[in-house]
Length: 225
Image (cartoon, rainbow, N blue to C red; front, top):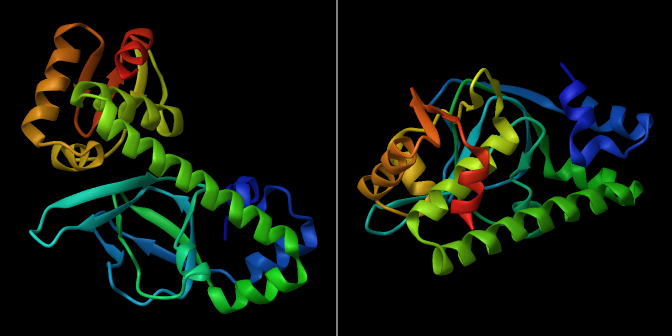
């Protein structure tokens, strides 16, 4: 198992080597192809997951069939921790956006480690606080921002976490379909496509297959506010 990504993840970064070794010894590896479901909304939850490589989308489905993406997560991030503190069915579905490698840790084993190593629980609470902060920010954006602003902000967030330098800008290989990008910002695909077309026309963005190249970072930041 490649533990380098895990060692740099927020949950593990501040743990001493002995505690880290005890935690990673209990991990199981999971490989998912693109589109594969790890668990679905309503499934029982008894395991915490760490992303080693690839991307996972967390989403919910409304009673009328509409889907909403709650988050796109990448290497070093964790999910499935909610059921540790609030046992019950999963409140979201987890699906691989790309070919993904995960490691899983059963909640029962994690609880044993928390009892002997309190700093693990502190790291978990910090992860939960960060997730809650993102959720609150997304809710505020739905109320106060228009669709182009939300699209710009979502692309900038994806660029911060997954972007890499390109000859003419920042390549963001988000690996999302147009429908998934629309679900992420809480808008229709047509409205999101219109916003993207406007960014392209203004020379701020170039579209590629399940990716974008941000050509004018400053303009995109201004539009996201």
